[in-house]
Length: 258
Picture 1 (cartoon, rainbow, N blue to C red):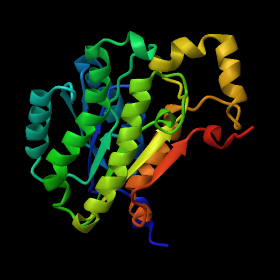
Picture 2 (cartoon, helix red, strand yellow):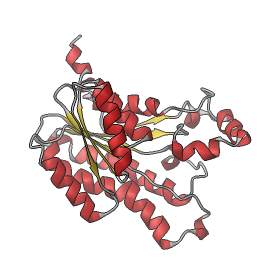
Picture 3 (spheres, rainbow, N blue to C red):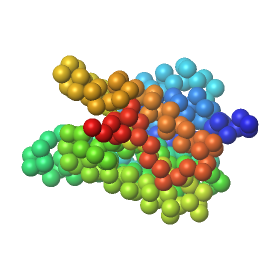
């Protein structure tokens, strides 16, 4: 076995939504496999906290941060310029930034539901397009989109969120086919309930938690590290024949049946 297939030494990765939760866990996982990491998020203080923590744990690796709202076109351009300044291209892009407002379909304002799409899918599409030239500088690069089981079935998250994640899953398939000849693999992960700040409120309700666990064969809430491990695998050379795939990180939720 060639151990290099399971390493990311010399690789540069950009993770959006990287200041906390799943994004920070993905950064940690990629660093553990030897990659250097660029983090982008709206929360400048959170980014600096993440950078300090990760650099303490991985002093031999490079961690840089850039505060930007990827839902904003001008800030996406600024992020692109920042990444270009590193001058070595990019090996990995993880489109993890996401947003949601959970309401009945008739209760959304136009700004709310359009904002969900702007953050969850339009930003991922635009960043993938903008960064395509940097990704093609290397013989084998990877994009991983953080989707959701909400894009595959109804899970009470609100229609716009599920619609945006379904669009992200379809975007993954289309770009995987279109960019295969460019040496870019494009995959996605689809998490179920993951223990983060965003889910802590709902999961604090014991009745709701019991209901979630009854629909989850592995009988536990997922951790950010569970998602990060799947993302990292899709970035590894060992996954070099995997593209256009969407891996559910859901404890068996989608296979539950009745």
